[in-house]
Image (cartoon, helix red, strand yellow):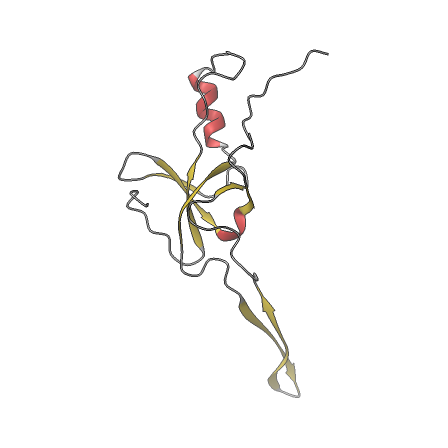
Length: 136
């Protein structure tokens, strides 16, 4: 449900980034400055809303000047065969991509280009930057 007050248009997608934990699984408290830095570089989130033109195909034409007139020499379909993600999917996206905004509900959101979404992720997959480091 979109409580953000932000409604993407065109090929944009609204994503609510995953919140980073304050304490790692190993019990290490993450300083607020580090949390904020890593939150800005978030890689995962939940799709909240999708613009009407996201993941649509388009037709490109290539025209050339032949004997003084422009003629279409090639037509090709570009785009996608199906949407990358749907509302409610947990996705990963390009680091630092999109526009970071605060919704009217006080939560942080990102407005992304549709092509910035790279994968759909199972909820059990951990993408956190703060992982337990093994001893050498």
